Length: 532
Image (cartoon, rainbow, N blue to C red):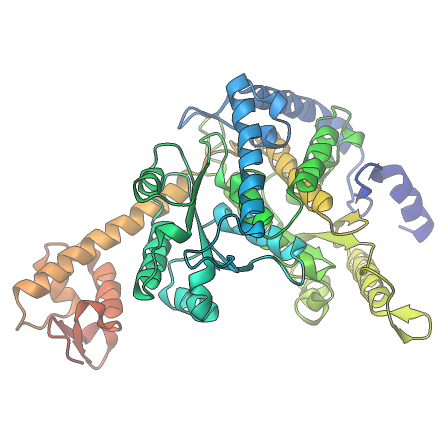
């Protein structure tokens, strides 16, 4: 297609939201003739389903739950006045608590201001707060932010080493809906131990974001933690960033959460439109359907041309893949749906994987995210008439053109600047796009049985580990190969798992399992001596 034709297509397809100063450009998606008309009935059905969702219909039949993350930025839409009041009161409580921390009305036990913030969570309870903090955090935030977002001991040691002596002025926010999520529970136990080792009271530093009556809620109440904020069962982890899950860490970082919510609310209004050309989330969903054949046939590559959006692809990875990756559709038919999401930032990618994107296997489509404003204030000229920001824009435009020359399709989302309102809008835009796309392909975006299956499998491994340790303790003088241990436990079918468990146990001194190396790894012999 000639450049003039592309320009005319750009003008005819461009969506522009004047309030948010946001555009969505689908002109580099080669929709076939009649595609939009063919998809319109499906989209109208998706709009109707979304309207029912916002009215409080049961969206997660497995758990009989509503899905209400849209109410978080428009509480008046909640189907029950008590929910509206809870949302309002929680937001007010978050702001009062953050202000009290900043002003020193709530202090560390030694009377000094809190200077550090440690957030303990997993999945959406970490990715959302991390993305918001990284994109909107200032040079000198009120509290230096760290995360325990995994159950990796070395990772937690690294974080604690970075905090160092400032542990006595560290506020801890523990985020878990049930309070029983193992990764978060483990992080809390590790943090508690670090505080106690330093002679500090963990409860005097701790805040919980959790479900009412949860294990974590009971612990916080019994121990007298500094505060407890609600995490409702109608908010999924991957859509929880505009609840206390994301708002409390953001407010403690000095981020304007009212503007964040306002941006999300404004985008929600736009994405409720039933006129497809006036609905940016629908345009994204249509682009995904076209690019993947409605079956996940191509990956989604997210390329934000802004350092502050580095974590956006990680955030979207969970939102999109956990929502859309489903074995069965809503009728129970096998479909194996999903869209793989990955990305980095521009122009870093031009020195990483753009070579393959342009000339290698054609198994993807791209979403460029362009930010017009380079920085606050003026920029240095690095050569006559050009700043570093001009180069960044040039690399974006060049990459977009170079990919399209090779028939690599792309969507471009453009915002004027990075601000709380913009980040709120981007969050809301993708939340709605995921919901609409899920309707188009007839899957339930709001449950995740695969995640639960993984948790159950991990529990099975740990139960087997208990059996192995007990067998070693019963016969302290005996050495076992993995195969001998599996037979001893009458679990020969689990020999591979036994091998992995024994290998891990012997690499760590905690359980006192020694190893005598064989010629090959599976010939190693293990005993409960603790000797190497």
